Length: 327
Image (cartoon, rainbow, N blue to C red; front, side, top):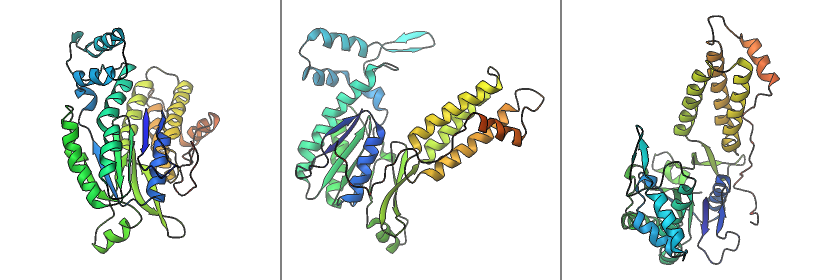
């Protein structure tokens, strides 16, 4: 579940928004950086969050809203259901149950009390300038107008999560300069402008056709590599159990699923590259179904056209320069 929280009481255009959609979170973040006075970003990551959720704190948070002890006892049983390894069930004293539909909900409740309310009622009140906070599941970033506010938040964040039995991944937690002046300031120092990753996208300081600042996004290199390796593993296995036509149709479904998420504004190059690589992976493993080659490139292109093979065109418009929409 996504939580995008505006903590500036005078800004009516961005209110507390709860949506189960990463695109809404990305959209709000991009427009905030583009249209507000944002100069610094704090990018943070919780180390093994789903495995380290403290059960005692979780029960306290749930009792704050749930008065029926029968429901609390049921949730405690689910929390302590454990994990299965090599056919044996091992009881756990921390973390949320793996594969459970309740896990995302409980994790969201936990971080709502640990981070969301803390930022809204404590951090924002102590900031000199504008401050915004965005979270989806355990992935979150904070935006600030002044460097002093960002540095103070970065320092307090480690203490805050540690108080609730969590820990930050130091190598993935940092404060960077990011905004309309970041590119020029970095070049004056002889450096490249900083980038940050959120929800699988690398955010960087770009320009419009007229040369003005624009927040742009591309698929992160890590996620792109993971997606291609995952598709390769699937194709290697599928060639032994699926017929050619079915393998092509399932491949199309997988590519469409990838593009439905990643094919957003300013990311067409990375999406086209993904489709290009997938076609070559598919061609390779289709021709290894037997000793006799199944396709030449012309016949393979014809087969792709017959199944309406997708392209890397933009499917979701997330232009940060557009006017704000009412939620």
